[in-house]
Length: 479
Ligand SMILES: Cc1ncc(COP(=O)(O)O)c(C=O)c1O
Image 1: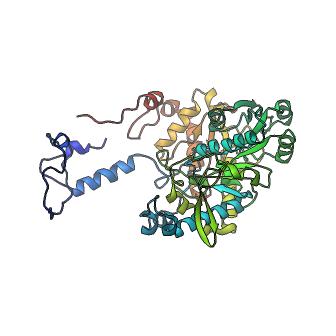
Image 2: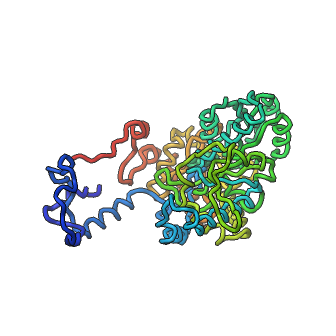
Image 3: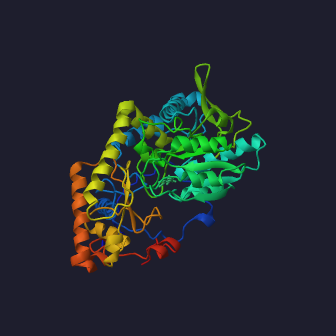
């Protein structure tokens, strides 16, 4: 375990040199009650020690820059560093959100252009860039649907249909937006069961929330029939765009018949994930929902970009100011750099990687749904479970080989599920290495199951009590 910085502390060492005070000191500048009487208990270390401390800390955690990160549903792909440099350009970085529009025309132009690009990518005309993450975008989208029905006087539309393959945020968001959730079972192919859908559609249906491909990584082949059925019942279709990596540049949610969708910019459009954020999200909708978008919206008037707040039907603000601007810069740079052909190549490569890797694992791990997958796939560890080793233990063993664990036990309809998303940015060699490790772990479940059960064996910390860590996080070091 790394020595703590406090253990290195030696009185008198310092990592910074503060310039000499060159103004007259005013004694009463800080009121007496705020003046510190005991010196702050900070570690006293040299600049080099401080540097090593943070570099070492940064390497304790797994990250995409260090190794493979096949975390299904999360799109942990490599994001070009150039986009970070662009977001850090002084002209973007030093902007103040309260500056008047005339002073920030460049930033507004970027947002406007991004809105146009996202509209072209999704096939839907109305865009807001305000939400801060995917789930936040879902909430924004459902509030638009709610405002729309309220405006039409259809207040009885209180139900949101969610398939059993849906990401957990979908039912949670629907509940948070004040709707009732109606779950429908998937058919044997892992897709929406049309009979089950028909049975729950009615005058109380507000919308169906779908992601396509779904969280099994499978494309909803009956999407045209689904959209027809829902629209005929007077409901709307919400598209969870977290899986856009599989279709970007090929098919558009608008063309599939969706009315509103969210795009997690930090997944498909090149913003690094980290510590739960900061993320970014665009919500895109049909023209009929445009009046309800959060305000302000960047629009163009007399050749100038403005922040339009004169929107009487708007659901209001969903976030301070105008969204996470740095994320918007990254997303726009990524879209411009790739262009439409490059974006289509992203999905082609993501799909190819997933199908290739699935075929390399299929002889050892059970593949419950046989049709080709899109950008991610689910395998079951039920054969290994029969030998006394669970999926949770298998994925922890991967950490010993320098690979991040895939998503596990989700979606819940697959027993001992392991959900793997290789992404388009990995080489064939990395995928081959991963398959070899997974197959070696399968061998271990027969020859040395204990080494899998006890994993991780080589990481900085061993098996954690995850429930305790989540409920009672202990993040403070005390001497
Ligand atoms: C299918 C799906 N929908 C929604 C979300 C929520 O997105 P966020 O984590 O940005 O809130 C995720 C995130 O993992 C997802 O995979």
